Image (cartoon, rainbow, N blue to C red):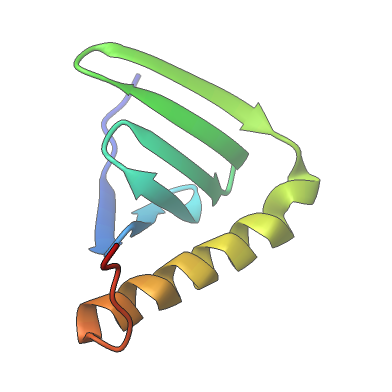
Length: 87
């Protein structure tokens, strides 16, 4: 296996990943992410050495993008104080 460079940027719960194979994004927290990239859609779970990654169908791309946009919009509305989560 050769050397490679991978770079990512976090925008709240959304992560944008840049690599040699292309651009991808994922949504979630440390230990639980759902994402889409040049190699397809996936679910990734795990922390501290034990991980699980499962590819999901290509038809899920639209729903992943819609879900990411809604969560990102909600996150920025919450951070700006427009909405609150007081229970």
